[in-house]
Length: 68
Length: 238
Image (cartoon, rainbow over all chains, first blue to last red; front, side, top):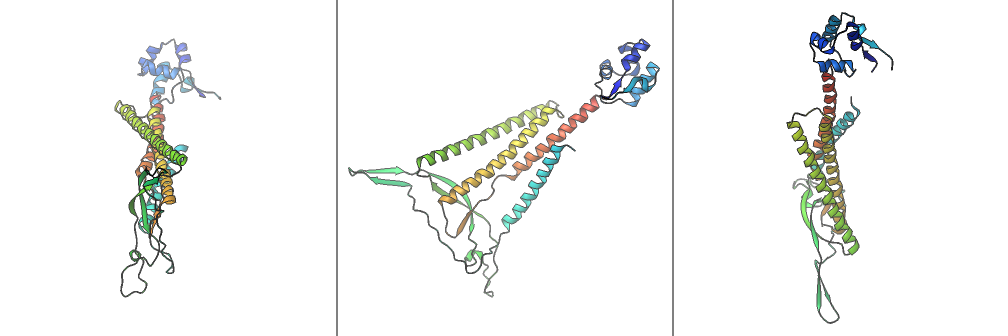
């Protein structure tokens, strides 16, 4: 998929664990794992907003477009 | 739109329109042959069902000629002189033709004398019965599996779609097989039997609901496949 989710990069930068982030944004660790591994088909604006808030970043820091 | 879905829905429309038209033409049949036509009378070949042969020592050897019974569709020959094909209007010299419907008659046809042909016909009939039985049992098993899975809560899955599509295809094949078998049987009867004043005609006796249900199942299978994709997308939306 050409949209890359860089949540793990941002988590490493903020030194935040998966469980902690999952708890902060209100999703299950399993769903966070789906997001991190790039298996997710879509992301809700509310989830994106929560991630940006928890990691103190912009949507562009979390999502990246790369040509196949 | 899914390519298969397009094909299946087109086929369903064609089938429904075809049945509607076939039903209209089957029941609204009028005589149309010119007044000069002669009614031809056909006789059976005088086949004996029991054949008696006198042997050299004077004993009589009886050979039973096996027969099979068939129901065929007949209708009066298209001749305006035939009393059943004209209305009885005393004021009219040439009364209007009346509409006639197919009639069913039972005929007892002796098996062919040629042993090899007879054996091949019997083998063919047995093979057809076996294939049709397997097909119907297969459909039944698929439908049972389908119901079991749906009762377990599995609806939008690849397997359900596959079961539906396969049972639909089998239903369509079963319908087409019935049509072909019916046609072959009519041709076989026609080669052996003639009925005076009546024409033996091929009528599609297969249940049209079979092909309509089959095509509907094939369409539903594709809709379920689309539903499966939507479900997956919904499940993988974080």
